[in-house]
Image (cartoon, rainbow, N blue to C red; front, top):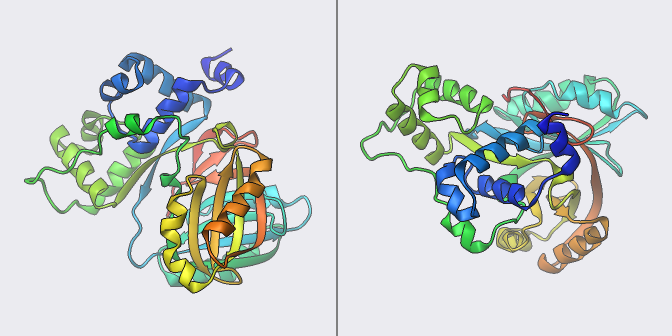
Amino acid sequence: MTSAVMMRVSGLDDLDLQILHALQVEPRVPWTTLAPILGSDPATLARRWARIEQAGFAWLTTLPGRADESASAIIEFSCAPGQATRTAEELALDPAVYSIDLTSGRRDLIATLVAANDAELAEAVIERFGRLPGVRSVQSHIVNLTLRLGSSWTVRALSDGQVARIPAPRPPRASSAKHVDAAIVEGMRRVLERDGRASYGMIAERLGISPQRAGDYLARLRQTERLLIRADVSGPYSTWPIVSWFFVQVPTATIESSAAMLAQMPEVQFATVVTGPYNLILAVSSKSRTEVVQREAELERRLPGARIVDRSMVLRVHKHLGRLISPDGFATGESIPLG
């Protein structure tokens, strides 16, 4: 039995979860820096992370930053009986589709679309998606404002004091180049897609530059958010395995202050203001199905005048930020390059 299989059987322990939380705070924190914070040693942390990643419990994701002209939407799909998985498999091949959930309720799939511009978004919604096998109907919700991203959510395994000791990413040196060539950006993205913790030496070797320049470029790209690196965790095996989508109607005055309110709810993984029959869509995590009702009540209490019009529970994640997920919730090791 391989170590990955053994880990799937035994699950994640407290130290594993602490490592995941730390990498959600800063994905490239050196093991030597993290070891005293977690009361462990660098070799143990490196070995633990390798096992976690190999087993598919968690992984690092490297994303291109959003361009000003990009356009995104939450897309609902209704599928013919028995066709949702087939539709998800075809939809997952689309590089503009970042994530796909198979869900309960009125919709069979919920997908996140990120297009280069409005024209590409319209082409996907009006033409491309309707041709997918098994699709009965497509409903789109155009994103106007994102209030909370999944990168803000953590497994909450560390104390506030431990989190405060994790250093922020290295800032770019004052003397380093302000502009990074597009070819370098793409090359660095490809290296980090394979290993988000790749050393500056490894990056330098792959790109044919010096390690110092590799460090400068990466620091600049992270500071300007042209490249985003984040740690993602398999939902069913996190401390908050139940994820629900809520479709909400909220008064405009409440929308304006909702970002601060939602920031006080660590269970909220994703929140976006949209155009459609609802004006706020959220993905919220819970420890149990019983807690889902409590989350609904808390949302309506924190958002004055809000009414949760509809809700769906995630039955299975098929794709998450380009990464394909197995039916039992583990990363398969296969990913679709994002557009």
